[in-house]
Length: 235
Length: 176
Image (tube, rainbow over all chains, first blue to last red; front, side):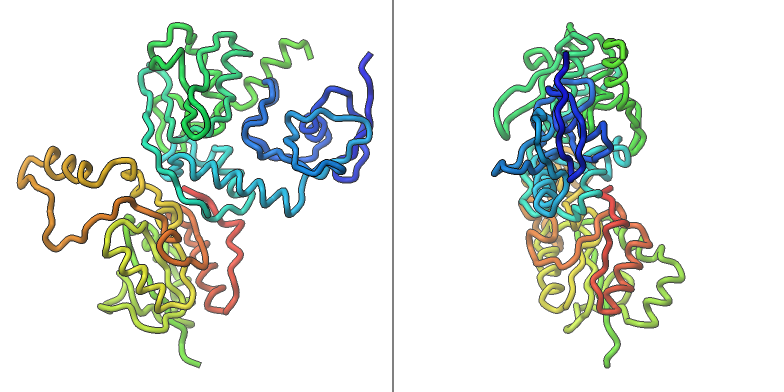
């Protein structure tokens, strides 16, 4: 039998099931917590740090997507401190790679761009690193632009967990982390890729896109992955 | 009280932000009733005047002339506005930043040239190592992103600044 617990989210008492994460409970109860690396239907990894929340009695911020609820847990999802840290996380994402919205296929449909707007990011306070990164156009239908990748790994998980192909992985560490297909083979030569496009649909930015679209033209079916998972679970 | 003054300048950008400024249509009449535009591509002045109230700066800081003009504008203006994505983020001009300057110039003016091959040096300012957002070179008081910023965002910024208020551009912002 599943154990029921009571938690407080922004003061409101909510009944949840033990094992659920704070983010799942919050979203099921219409409490908004921003997130980039989290996608309903995929495992949670806590990579982007946007979903950080304050938990009473805990001295430091915790990611809502990987923290399970417990009886009596009291969570704050929005405060000046949280807004400040989320803004820092967003600005660091912009500083890390070359995000040029003006020439991006996903401009206007990009989760990073939208969150920056929502959080009042008017400029990036940190020096840009301007890395020199490749664009992989070897796949006949899709393109991967590392300049726009935020290393959220949603593509990695969509491919491994939903499609079962596990084409994608993260190579390197820290600032040198890089999304790679099949031990760093060009995407077009990756024999395990089924060209299903789930990675493209899961990508929050313009890092992965279908070929043939111009600036602002690439829209994504973000609900695809979540829908497939829920159908398989028979929900 | 003296009439407030506005200076504008165009560093490494495409002039699209100035086009967007002109796109405020009849709004420009309301602005000019309150203030004078005393420097920039739209007027004739040769030098950035002293004691300008509002400076609108378009474009990234990409060469030595850009840097000099930005520093002069800062020194002689009360409020400096970074206008548009190039001034705010570096944007398209910064896409060259991963390539060493020498290599970049050779690629364009030597390898890429069919006539008069050679990197121009006469009458052109030297490129800086990287095209940088404005706030890396000078203190910026207000950032207005957009490629270009929407005319109504520019009009709001000018109207509020000329009234002595700090504009809340939050709802009008978008990168790209």
